[in-house]
Image (cartoon, rainbow, N blue to C red; front, top):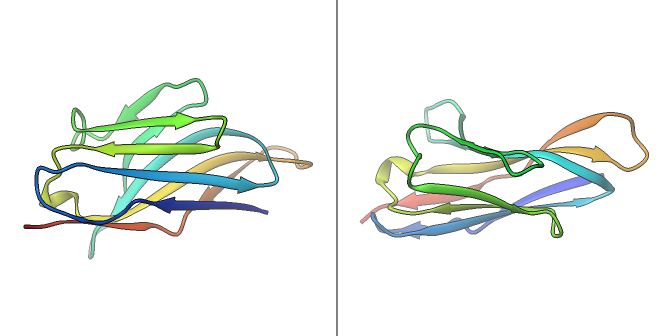
Amino acid sequence: QVQVVESGGSLVQPGRSLRLSCTASGSIFSINNMAWYRQAPGKEREFVAGITSGGGTNYADSVKGRFTISRDNTKNTVYLQMNSLKPEDTAVYYCKAVVRVAGMMGSYQYWGQGTQVTVSS
């Protein structure tokens, strides 16, 4: 099996920074795309940032210029550096990994359990 676990969520003041981490583990042959999504209470889950296996990135307009996604392939880990945080960034942040599983054909999509980010004064 494959496990995806996020960490780093916290309560922070507006304007501060926070770094989230997401690590995939288990019977992994390789990891293709990884991405961050978020969901605020009463709202639909929305895309935040994504990164390909080759390092290509894309961002939601609401976070462009403030957030940076990166990955460390040797650790099966993706990061989300969040700067200039706003109250509107408050949400549960979820990590998604598209993974080739050892001994299996094709790729599979796995989600983490989420980590809470609260931006408040």
